[in-house]
Image 1 (cartoon, rainbow, N blue to C red):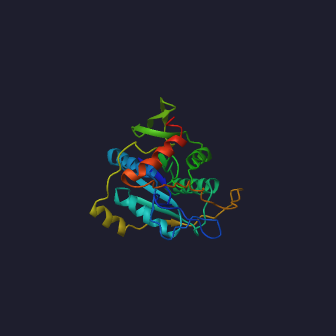
Image 2: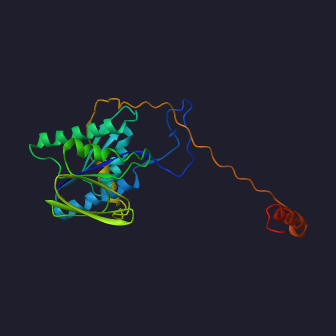
Image 3: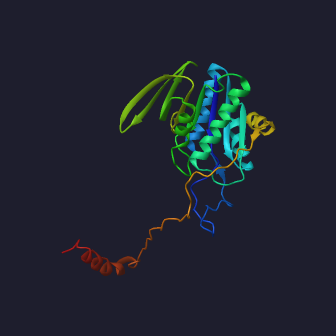
Length: 257
């Protein structure tokens, strides 16, 4: 079974977000990078499927040369092939990204003289843009069935059965391959890379291509960080001396009458 997982290099979350002086990008010079939790689960799912059914788990990313780091992280946990669609660092919109991935899928099919991949896995959405579009757009371009938000997947290599939750209700879909599926965090528990896996990933040769950038028709005017809600604490006093001030405050709040 030939599985392709598409991932994206995104800044690690958790720290303070700072915008560049021109207002066009998020300042990432002091940030670490990773792939989103949804995509980590997609890589794990691909590795499990190919270990059980045989075949190849390929991981693809579109991004700058530094995105090879995220491909090697995926190789370290068991993916067998890495493909880098190298860009000049500009942010690609969902339309252009989907077109580049579609071209890569078709190129693999043409080179192999067959259908290429049996299954394409995406994270349900990227951790930075959260636009939910790329997987659906790729499926539409290829004419393949697509289910999003999946948290359970079974396949025998010919058909696939998936489950997802929507507004508190479980939904089950069964369809033939090839297909596109976007998965959510929780479909599995991703493994930690082993030391032999890291060494193997470090030596691996990545396949590289340079897709042509194209505008999506959308224009970014600028970014801004939402205004932070300010919180202020007032010290009323210490010990018994604070009691009169506390009583006055409770009267102002209407607690004491």
